[in-house]
Length: 431
Image (tube, rainbow, N blue to C red):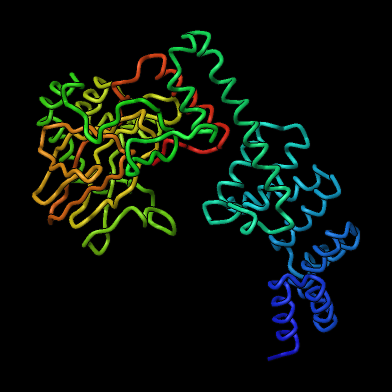
């Protein structure tokens, strides 16, 4: 092993053991042999920053950028040094390009959020604080002191406190006009749902198998499957099954019209949702709406299906809902157990092509689709679906409002979804 490699190993081992002074000394020894070592330059620069020696830190980081132009870690460390010097605008100018290149660089996003907050851009700061914390915590970081680097703990605590207060204030503003319009009594369930979302109230679902990932409306009847008598629009929709199936078959003849339901395959894209016996499980969609966007060409290609969908009480939230599609599950494919985002919406299937050995299971209760017969279920219960045949299974899938919600509650959920999504900077109903 070379002297440089040995010194690097020694310095990293000392850093892992919390011996920062020893690691700094070893990295200084390393720089005497390798003056352009970027890792050593960055570590020593962070040590200077921790002591408030910003000029020395910045000099070393500039040296590192000459040795490795554009190195993301070095740019982030230089921005952090500028933050410590309260040079908010200069730090922001370094951080924004980093996040364009790598949106998942959550430490850089955390510093950017602080810069925005200090410059008075509070709404944008809230969004970036949320994204930084949620990205980190999804990867197991910042969930407790032990998973948060000591140098970031105060800033992470500040981010979480800012989120708590900022989100409460924002959602109070969202609810205020609705309370004036309908009265507080009409919105009691929604106010409790907001308190649960903010973590101020512990809401209990009907069972551990019911796990909404976003918004839970308490005291709302949520059986796994719903009584068809609750949906008077079933009958006319079911009568249109032959016409809808004919339009579907014309689509299936041109496979390129379908899109992967979970997005294009790749790391983190749908792998946890799909399994089965097929070498390449397939779950595709031919969309009429997705996240509220209308697919005009698809509607024109299948006008009777599009018209039929207009006759049901779809969830309509600008920019987020409805979601309507031919849901196409390939032979040997299994949509693995998972839960949906909110019990305020109900998923409905109108089965159009159902081979043998295909079924839906919600909360442990198996339902075998029957062509032309709708089924509606609460997808916040753990559910799965499978196609164990050698043919394609297709249902017309769409989301409708829970029949237990009244107009005031639907309006409040509409406003809350749009308000929270704007804060989060993401589509919270996707899933």
